[in-house]
Length: 337
Ligand SMILES: NC(=O)c1ccc[n+]([C@@H]2O[C@H](COP(=O)([O-])OP(=O)(O)OC[C@H]3O[C@@H](n4cnc5c(N)ncnc54)[C@H](OP(=O)(O)O)[C@@H]3O)[C@@H](O)[C@H]2O)c1
Image (cartoon, rainbow, N blue to C red; front, side, top):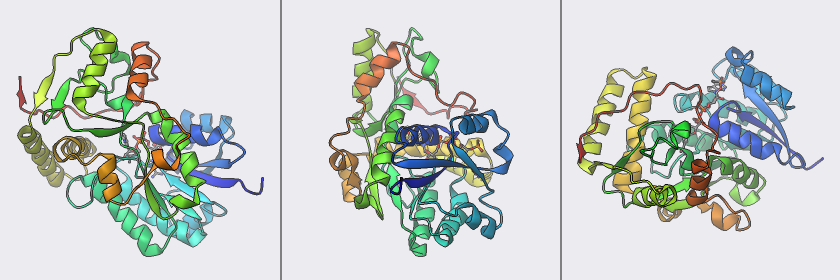
């Protein structure tokens, strides 16, 4: 009991946060898990469901008065944030409060692909602003990145067999030739990885890359074709077309920075540019940037390979993610048929 960590999770009703919650609740001997919920969400059924699972709820407006937030964080050992892509900078005050409250480890909202800060991905740059703030505070931290989820990496099939689980459909684009290897993870493996990482003193004040596979888009499409017996008609997007579309999204975001859908379009284009044109999202580049490799830290944990995920997907067993989310329209990108 004495060695249990009291973990406060922001985002427990979301996709990343929900996966982490599951992973931590699976280890009641190690963690006492609580959820940080904003006042406007307290009455949501998803929050009530958390309480029904035995998760204590702490209510706070993370952009409200600092002293209230500091009180909310009292007694917390580990604070994990999985705030949505639109809310990154709201973590600045959260970090300040965590420092004042004596939180022993802050896990800011990384949980993204490997990419350098400084103009490659606007979302990554907002995350960096939070990391810099954390370091200026001298707040103990761990940054956990995970590559791209299997759940949003598979192409759709002509039969419509996997449409039930697809966030975007059809999804048959191959970017910049499709040969660039890229780090992948099953969303369901993020929780067990986080549980391992936050118990581990080696990861304190470090960055960790946690993942289950490294595959190119061409390899992903081939796996889906081999397992399904179907032929996917690919839509090829050249590097130049992607760069042009990304510039268009950046201009739209600059003209209307408060537009959430325009922001999400830019985030999507930045991901493709970083992963497929620059080739950032690899274990080798992660090591170069100073990350510890989760597969080396925890050799006994066997994360799900994409091919294993794909079998379950084709068997109709995948849980659909983002059930209630409105996604922006696809950005029109010139393709080369
Ligand atoms: N690696 C990948 O492939 C991948 C894919 C998607 C996302 N991501 C990353 O994961 C992160 C989380 O994204 P997600 O898609 O998992 O998020 P999500 O499903 O949209 O969930 C966001 C969560 O944050 C909570 N939240 C938002 N603002 C809050 C506030 N001010 N106070 C308290 N709670 C707040 C939401 O609660 P409410 O119920 O109050 O709304 C919700 O629980 C993103 O920042 C993104 O970088 C990575």
